[in-house]
Length: 263
Image (cartoon, rainbow, N blue to C red; front, side, top):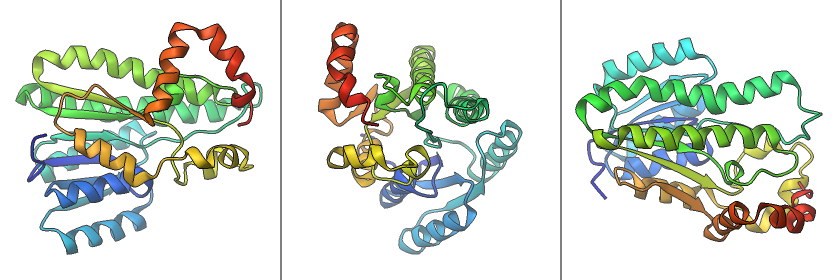
């Protein structure tokens, strides 16, 4: 792993959860940060905490990644402040767990605008300079849901399938430019994500014992920065399920139907 000392790292969705934990770990390794989220108050507290403890620069910007015009404006400011971006972590995202017939078109559009279009728009802002400098790393936070679609997550799974498809193509495009692309596919994480995704609390109750801690996931992400890591699948046993699903989809769906419907 190359040192992150002095590197410039941009993190979307940085106000809480794994985004904030990634920021904290990057700060301990001497990286300069640009933290983006809709909640400026939380970003300001995090900025003060990190600058007080570490000799780094922390820039913060309010950003709604569903607004592509706003993305363009904010990244122009980032380039003015930091010069270059060495690592982009596309972490912003959300989900709503509903059966397909219950999902409103407004929810569908919102999930795609944040989870897919926003991620692509942020990535497109850093690609030209990374290609020119022949250096950089794009880390896209996807999900195990992008590999195994389950009931009540049809739209969310679709967005994460899109992220994986985009990332896999992008990785091949950038291979000769020495720019790395990593996808992170975690299972359920103990964050505020489920405040929106699981309004009734049913899913959280059923998977409580399997939930990952955000600090653990963040550690795996930061350890992979500026390496050729293709994917990070967490927990590892869950990634074996996606392999089984690819090889034996009909059997997997039949056997797992009861468990999947607990969501």
